[in-house]
Length: 428
Image (cartoon, one colour):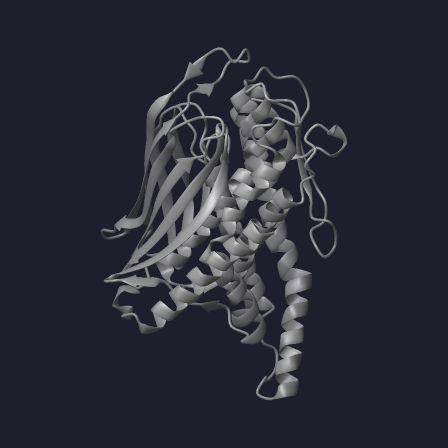
């Protein structure tokens, strides 16, 4: 409990500091840039394209909701009007907004999280089940594979962690959009918050007896299998227990975007009756900067991330420095760089992402004897947007090309593979 309070305090301090810095900073570097909402197709519909597609579909539906339903229905100049407006907006949020925002994350968790790993390993007969989202139901989901499959220990771990793996991908996507445009929409903030909250409570509410099969879930199974590979199966001598994993995940509270998302929901939307607000950031000369800390799942154990978000005029970038927990392997980690709008000639815009890592090898064979990709690896991808001229809507064509070597990056296949995505986007 003390650790949880301490890390939440870090996140609050980061947020308060960035707010105070933003009030006195020069806004010359806050020039908004274009951000694209894309519907993407990739073979197997992987997590990266799935996360972007979910964010885009959510954006489209919520934009229509606000256009036709609205968020202000009468004058709120006096106390009675203001009270009625807040009450009406709360009812709209609870009955209309929350179910969609919550379900979009659960859909990503099951279909583009677990499901993408099932598809990656060529498993058939995949079944998805969903209950009604809050407040109409529990909001849970299920992705199940029926039949036998010959997969390795690392592939099995990738399946179990696939659901929670997609949550930070959705949230990174949203964070980069906000940094690019310098605008946080309250419905995107709601999607971000529930993406964080669902993963957070799923982990913290997990029963800690990993050998009780009557209440199994992804977190318990992940913990059990990663210990079993190291031949630690005695409950008294586990190298990493569920309790240990929960403690490591407390780091995720040190994230100013969580506080900003709550501010956008509670203040911007519920209290003010507005749709969006600016994104405060620390001023570093002509750059704007926001840091975030988190811990993520990998087939090798937990990986700690320092995510550094930068904004410079119409360009946003993420420098992700990661370091692997030493419980099961020594000296592993990586570096990732993603830049939005790195180059924007007429009718075009380009994003680029580069990843480098030093990791333990990946086991692909069912006998777990063969290890591939140990040591240095990397990935490079370039995504291009072509803005179709003479259109009533700002529609663009999207193409992403690249290559990834054997190794683990969130949202990509474990094996070496080309990176390919094609789709259509709307420029905002």
